[in-house]
Image 1 (spheres, rainbow, N blue to C red):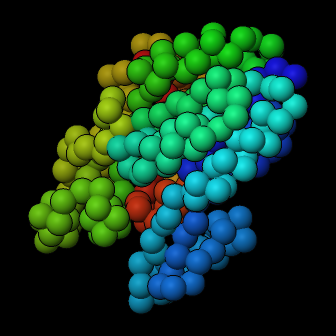
Image 2: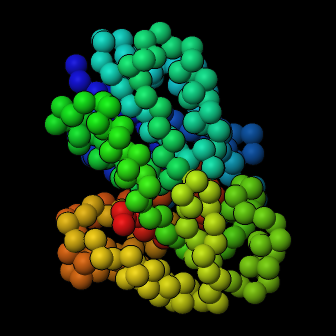
Length: 280
């Protein structure tokens, strides 16, 4: 029966990986005004086109208690164990809801809830490693221990074109957003060890922000060789590809998982976002 891996659609893993490892998915929703969408009913291109053209910015909602319980119960029904790795509690209430669902669950001792303290492929790389260990029949307790260790080492660095979406989503202050807009600042940010988004630097151009990302990678690159690295992006494939090629050719990483940022996370970062994820 083994260990089943559960996550939510903020992990931004490619569909072929989700299918290969039979990762169980819980869905968060996006809304434009009063109209609600399951992210998998919108293509990435359709979503970002709507985001640019809509007079209203999209909003997101966490999974319902019913959906969490349904997926957890389904995974445990055959006697299997399971690990659920969710979007950072510093960005959403999903982990809190998951813990409440866990309290109501029959057989809950066979399920471990993990707060990834990450988003997008930062969360996704934890999920992927957990799935690979589960496929090797590693015990749940050992996988959980590995997840906590990897979570502490995972770097999540990113830049965005505007603070507008993070401000509207309540992820950074309105004052920071106003200053950024007036000065046309391109911020470089990270997800801190507690799972909250924090600014690292304020740069006055897109090229400057990308150069700063490169410098940050160089400062933390001593252990990159042989690693799995994640790159996620919104409508900037060419820039993301340059980072991918550098990781493969300069840093000699084992593999690069590169995928567009999905609608849920994308609602808060907007077009032009590019994010880099690796363990140090």
